[in-house]
Length: 246
Ligand SMILES: [Zn+2]
Image: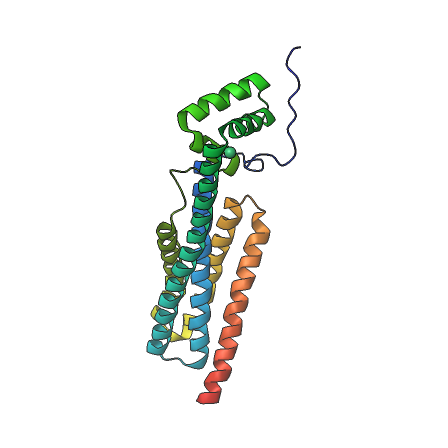
């Protein structure tokens, strides 16, 4: 045996807990964001229309409140997502810039650093150095960004895309309680909405657990109970307020 046993320090490398490639991870993140957005749309607009329905049985009033809630929530989601993803992209850019400067000022140390990373992943010293040299020749910044930061410099997070995606997801979710409570006959609208929202929340709870590989049952239960509570609370408060002003 000539090769020494590679030692991998605990917690080294950006992907230790994630066996997937970046593409899969990116798609999973997008799916998770969409599910969360839809969930938000269901719960907030269900809460709004139930609150108003607790105060009045006038369909037009419920519809106006629901649409206002849908538009306000969708815009708030988009703005929030835009801000947070922009901040993330700024951080990525700053890290890349720092790496670029380091590569310019201290290429030897950076080469050793890159070789070290591949050695810690199990390559022999010679092979790790060879890999580092070839990667550096090919695209030094890209190699360092990938190995050290887990960032693809050609594929930074996109704020507008994230903003539109969560806005769309919120609207889709919000449409469900809005449509059931305004289209179903007055005698049944509350219960049809509760049932529809319960089923939808079970679905989003299942999807978010599945995308994060978490226990499905508990996620579904938490999600459904949370949504039902939100509807119950706004309905009761809407009823109180309605009696107060009516
Ligand atoms: Zn570096």
